[in-house]
Image (cartoon, rainbow, N blue to C red):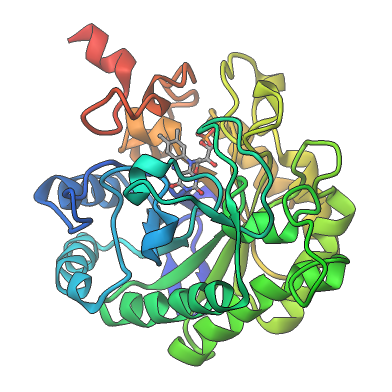
Length: 366
Ligand SMILES: Cc1cc2nc3c(=O)[nH]c(=O)nc-3n(C[C@H](O)[C@H](O)[C@H](O)COP(=O)(O)O)c2cc1C
């Protein structure tokens, strides 16, 4: 069974093909430091048999806070706590990668002490109902460098690799997308210039961690919005990243403006047909590039996961919501279970109302 066969991403030896996709936890303390609760969550995922864990989005620069109680990494102070987290996961035989993130326009002013969010262009954001400030050259370079510095800290803290959050309408995606990037300078204007921010972020990370360290990205295959990124352009972005030396690409899609059934976290995956909703996209990525591909989005059953791997439509299977409900789903799958208990109600997404991210269906049963 391919699902339980090992895989390697550069130096990371992964025991199976199951990845925990980045999932914000709301479990750091108010200042972004690691808590015992956070360590327990990740230990349980490692014990549950997840081959490769990707953390929730981690803040690289204070101007990019997209949620409360996010893990922070914009200062060396954070390294010590994160080292405890990676040690705890490694002690259970797990592997852990950190997701480096900046929210850009997808940050409420309340998370930024009343300051206006930053973005490539001043394009209104409908969720937090805010028009961001167009970034200056200085602001752009400062944030580029903050990705590199955060990667250096992540390596020092013992993470097995880093993943750039380049999807879901966050800052890197905002620069890539013609919908949110309306600039006409080095950072925007045509496809090549819209790629510059990601290219500089990638180069800054490499300068800090070297070429032997695994550097991955989560990318939108499509923004699912008129005037946004299309599959054709995303495949060209993937090709550019392959030429630069990226070590893995996780295929996702959608931004906040996309329709609910075209967003990254689609609700009600209650039939086989609705499962693996970015499958057709990862298939195209697999045809175009040789870099390992992770597929995320509504993969509910072991049989679907196996079918994707058997048909060579992805190399790794990424899960988020099903692991919130059942952190030991990989072990259960190995023993023969097929369908995850998660009903994809998206209760776990209402994090502003929750003390921390959790399965609200399980909560009801208690
Ligand atoms: C509560 C919650 C938090 C999430 N946080 C992140 C995040 O920090 N970074 C990210 O790239 N995706 C995040 N996602 C999206 C997931 O990684 C994943 O792409 C999406 O949920 C689809 O996978 P699934 O159907 O297995 O849940 C989050 C999803 C949920 C439900």
